[in-house]
Length: 264
Image 1 (cartoon, rainbow, N blue to C red):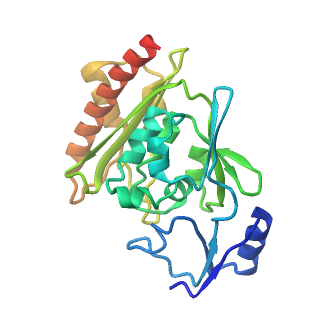
Image 2: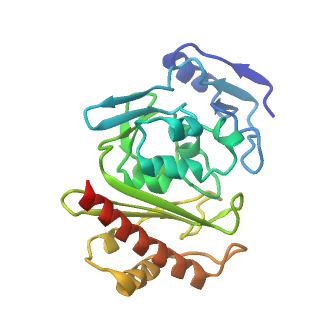
Image 3: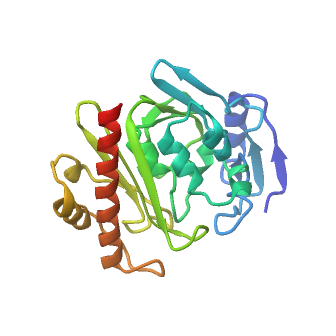
């Protein structure tokens, strides 16, 4: 339960407050995660990010810099944001939640589903941490310690990329979330969430590098995807169903993405 709410005026002050209250403090962005089950925090000190100017969206050449405090609805509405990231932001069904939830929070939160991460992986996104360090989105997700994100960089907003989410209902838990991209040189990225065991009760999206380097289509591609993943049976579906649907979705997405790349 939050007992103290601190509102620093600079990144340096925020990091210093976190060091002072290590173990009992949590970052407070939109509040959609720390205030609601199942991710409700047990920490007693909240350090607000409101005054840190992490909410800008700026284009630098072909790269797009997105502040970690940008709300998901802002991403959907902003003209510079790539279609794939707009799509994945809309996977969060409730507009009320989208107006509250932030990009950085969705990446850093340890929850059962990571709806935006496959698209960010396919877009080859990098995260810039509050202390100035930069790392690939995949490395950030794999790290046990998820440090404060200042912004996300998408290196090429023109990259052909598309994502899709399979759920039993519009507001239901995701079964499989997938995203793919195809670069001008033909190289692919295939990223999936919901097809591997949870790690410490949180989602662990995966990239299918072995499948990416093969020139497969149709049933052969479906089979390769199904064999490359390790889903777990739960109330959302059996292992067999998750393997099947992941293969179908990736195959369809790659065909559509290839069409997008050819038209670009």
